[in-house]
Figure 1 (cartoon, rainbow, N blue to C red):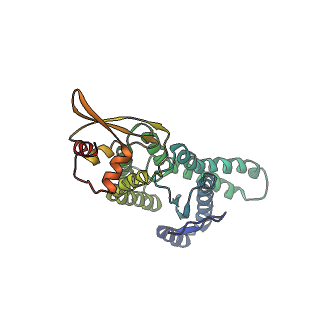
Figure 2 (figure 1 turned 90 degrees about the horizontal axis):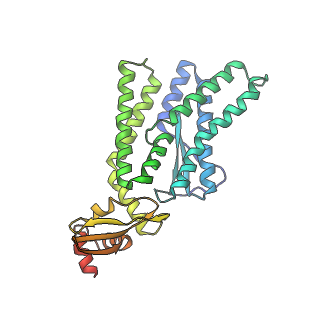
Figure 3 (figure 1 turned 135 degrees about the vertical axis):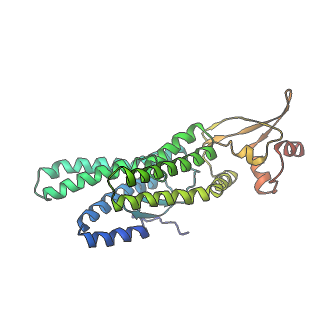
Length: 288
């Protein structure tokens, strides 16, 4: 995949966006759609600018209604504080829009109706993106919070499963309790399908996380020892790995007998030597 290094991002439109463009022409709401797309682009520009400051490798930005995705080459191998700032930079753009709306509301540059539409959609898109649903900003912020205290796999599996439950709940509420709107229904279905796809690929995401650690690409901000039993598999051990942490692994054979092995050695045995089905105790004995 070619990495985009220009000052300006490469923009892609998600296929679902073409459906909304068609709907806007049919229903006469093209002005509203243009306002939404401008706000979404400005939102993603915040992510893009902050990612450029941290020198992330950026592929492109994909826009869809009420949100977008900045596609990068960084797969959970950047420090959590960088990912936090890149994520929060999007919602902060909405505050800039609110600030600009104040003098515009007292001028004659834009019609009052347009000002009200911008204010309304800016508020809706901000609140929508802060929902705790992956891959929205709120879902990412929740994932980062969980990753600070829990292993990567546990946090990632939880946020995807939690997102599917919340999205499905909102769809049911919209069908039977809230007033039904086709656009919000499509958006929720889209989010549900996105998380379903993420869930199907969860194992490969975890392996990619491990592979980047094996290649030395993961950020290290501290050391957290792990204690495991000698009959634990390598994958059991890997499931305890946390982001931004280095793990010396203490293997317990009995109450007074233990050995220690570094995580990099475990990753080497898994990816380089193919010790997929061995227990950590067997590997410690062999490495000794």
